[in-house]
Image 1 (tube, helix red, strand yellow):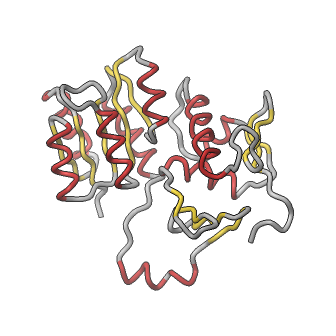
Image 2: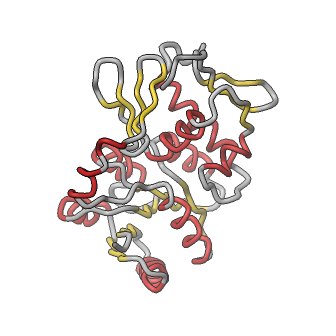
Image 3: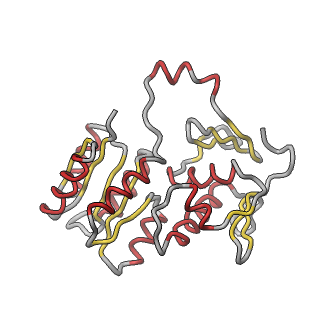
Length: 242
């Protein structure tokens, strides 16, 4: 099944250029000129990934992305004007998977789309999903249980912990490499980040969000510890996982 992408951009020429390029690259692409049109499309159909322009008239891309993240685990790439680092940081804090800086080349958009889609779980056919239920991969840590195939984390009370795709990507890297020191570069490579000067900052933001969700005291983490000047390590006592 083709990955379905929605491009939300108020500049007609750019919107159509991105849609045409991604369509020619094998994706099913739909466009919207503003947040209101995008919301209507989101309510009518599902998508694997959204490219959201931040600076749009009316409701901006950050607000639309916040609403979207509250409803689905769709991949989100923000498009931001050059020099607006604050927008990029806020976007990442709101759960974005990546961002692109205007003006951008269409080849860069394609590279980032491919990178995010590699981390987005593809919908499975109902029968196939049912057949594989007994072989799902789980891992317990503390009072949590990570479901690698379902790409979700369940808390001690049985409730699902709301988590963006990019956050689960980082958590999975650590859970499959427990008690090992990982540099920011190693984490970025493992989750398929496109090489970027701010990739280290992006990793830090995701780890900060993870701590808020899995640590009793994020300021004094039990699991996800910082090794100053080196990177991070996910500490798990022997016998505390299965």
